[in-house]
Amino acid sequence: MFHLVPFLSTGRKGSVTAEEGISLVRVLLLLSLIPALWFGIIPVTRPEVTPIVVLFGAYVIFLAVGSHRLALLHKTDLVITLDLLVVTLVVLISGGVHSPFVYGYYLTILEAAVRMNLRQALAASLAMAGMITLLWLHAGSPAALETTGFRLGVFVASGFFLAMLCGMLVQEYRAARERVDELEFDSGLASRLSGELRGEGLAEILLGAFLEMTQFFKGAAYMCDEGSRPQLMAARGFEWENGDLSPAHLPLPALPAGASGGEVITQTAPATASGEVMACVPLIHAGHLRMWLCGLAQPPLALPDRVRRRIRRLATHGASAVEAARLHEKVKDLAAKDSLTGLPNRRTFFERMGSELARSHRLGRPLSVALVDLNGFKAINDTYGHSTGDAALIRAAQLLAQGMRASDVVARFGGDEFVLLFPETTTAGAQRVLRRLGTMKTAVSEEVTAELRLTIAWGVATWPTDGPSPEQLLRTADRRLYEMKKRRQNGKRVRAPRAARVVRLVKNRIA
Image 1 (tube, rainbow, N blue to C red):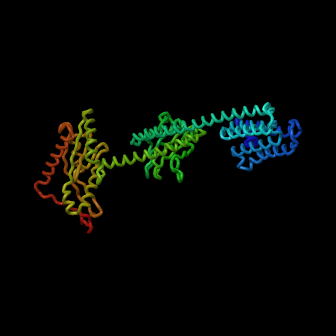
Image 2: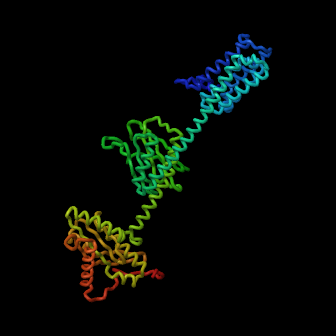
């Protein structure tokens, strides 16, 4: 009943809902009873017609006018309860089982049913059945059983009771089915995420699930690292080769303060000509943003509560999976690099050399490998200390890496030895690079303010002339390195490199 006045007062256009239609018809019927009772069109067996009309009219007017000012009157449970109390009171004082107000129960039950408030509809049905039974017992006459109101009331009340009971069972079944669907969704998502430790693979899985549940026609996933720009990891539905907006240029929103992950942040994509709405979901782990899931759709954007709940769970599972993948990549990266110089270690070098050697086999092109040794490194340690020796290794690694091509590989082989890989390069080409790197002048640490002149010795081997396997090539390169060092030493004792000017040593350096 309380929906009638807002419906009439706002003057909004559009179709009338079933609930609004029921409320309108119900109020009109109740209002029509007032003049019918007042002027005796509907006879009342008792003399209390005036207070009955006043009470009933005051109640209808109270609900119609009070809905503007009392928030309590916007609660369906409260209004239906008041309806039952008022109708029961009016029936008691206006003729008992023969009262025309008995039919007010039907309207209350029907309104509760239309509003899908099964609990209140069941309560109204039981109240009506109980009320009619009590009135009949009070009448104490078998003739009361023959009244139309009694028979219709019993029929309607029992029918509604069974219907509402079945409805409640169906509602419980649907709720249980929905819980099972949500558990299956969580289980399926966790199963797909648990077997993937690559960032690109996780982005594809999460983006696919996000677009499927939201029914967006295109979207993209961006990996986020602290201090760097978000990186595009996956995209679907874009046709940028045909002039569509590139997902790499989508404007990502600012992360709201206090965001915990799973919030749907909407904004208009300014670079699109079609006015698409962009919905972005942050994946946050331990307060750190790990990924953005973004989708584009035509306005208006309306996501049901069930979809929003799933998005939050997707963000929770996804953030944990992305964090696990990030830590996995970090551990994998640490395991693949030398802890001192940051260069690839022996294991990583052999993996890369194996793949490059296989490629050389397929293409029939040469591949060269070089073993490089720092001259006089032991004397550096003995003269300046191990901290300066470590700084010399780090600086030498940097200079070697800077002097190589992007396709080449430089790795630390152990001690003061480095190994260099030159894909599609002959022995002469590798020798030219090494001669250019043969002498390096640099200040290696804060403890030595002057430049040290670092020199290297090397040995080069080339596939296929010097051996068919990585082991054979490295043995050949190692033998040639030893021959070069022997020629350079020429039987003389190697001294520590001298600085071009005065060398200042820190008194308490680490030995």
